[in-house]
Length: 118
Image (cartoon, rainbow, N blue to C red; front, side, top):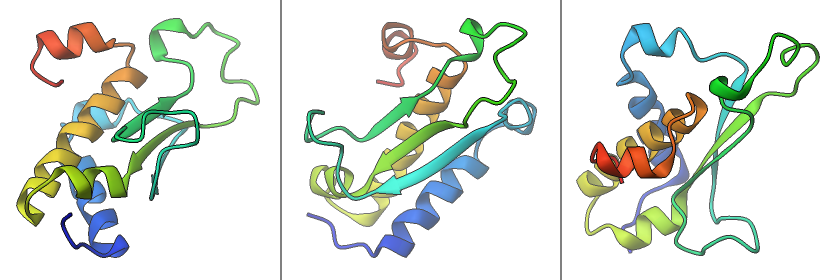
């Protein structure tokens, strides 16, 4: 397991968000990005990230009125357990962030896998 402080991991998540193309990042609205140590009980223990919300492709004109923010959660410990060094953690966090942001835009796992974003 890679040793990385929570602050270093959160910085990696922030850096990954900064890698999003500006035109795409501007379209993200009412989304909170969180870091948790472990996935929720009942989820796969090696889950790296989770999008919870209503993808843009499924929203109607009334959706935003009073809606709570969507959530993207990146799980620290599973990521640290699967990686061999800090550079690999940074790379995996970037892939996970892109993967979860893609879900926000309505791109499903099959399409992400086809695009190489497993």
